[in-house]
Image (cartoon, rainbow, N blue to C red):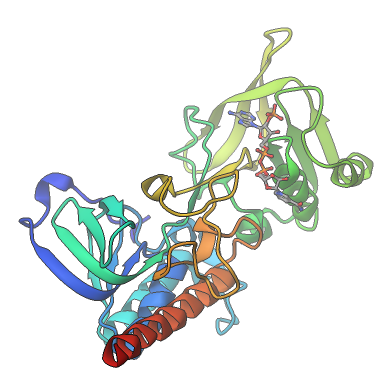
Length: 328
Ligand code: NAP
């Protein structure tokens, strides 16, 4: 992905300390939309991009459901546009990653590879990462047949045969969604029982385009320019086979990128940051937006909307703090 930036800690700028009104962790749709809104409110936000500028969306070939782009827009291109727009109003992007966050003190302390910042308000927008199979060919063929997002990529498999890995709600829901495009959808699951809820199970089992391969794991994604087959192994018999597929969709769980905040802010049992409708976390002055707190919608439009809301609330929080300080 040409929009991805690899950050090399060795090349980081010399350590510096800076106090900022608003700091945003993460530069996916939520972080960059928050940056735009915070910049326009003259809050001079600094965005730590982390390792993946543009977020998960930048790995999507074409985004066709982001309003305003009737012909669709490249995931990387959309991220670049978000970035340009935020920078136009004064947001500063730092190609650096937070290594430590201290939410127990105000202003909040954020340590990075390149320096140290103190932020009066903090917006957590570090997103989530799909779990990977970690098999040969998976990484190389991502975006070339291997995908982690049916909503984003399903359209490209019109009339094709695709495989879905996983047996949870996501795998089944996405498999059913993929039947709109693909001719057949084969769910490959490592056990002989599904984890997904009963209704989804029934809908998938009864679907004429969906088949199941049980007790089987994918051991390789095969293809040169594009995926052409997957190698599978039956875990009970040990039998290995190569099966031709045009697409391989992997839904084996997601992991919110919240390790940095663990124990400092309230999270649900899956590790998603908890917020209220105002994007406020359990720590006053700390807001969260996008997939770091949202396991339900996971769309560019919803993440961007939440990012904008978080920035608006951060502005209100700072205004309120300032007024309180004046009256005390
Ligand atoms: P999940 O429930 O954790 O299911 C992951 C699936 O992937 C499981 O079937 C698991 O197999 C399989 N798996 C895990 N690691 C694997 C590996 N290395 N190789 C092969 N298979 C592997 O994840 P999810 O489906 O993304 O759901 C996450 C949460 O969101 C759940 O709480 C779910 O209920 C919720 N959700 C709800 C809805 C809905 O209600 N409409 C939709 C989507 C998600 P095993 O079963 O053998 O462990």
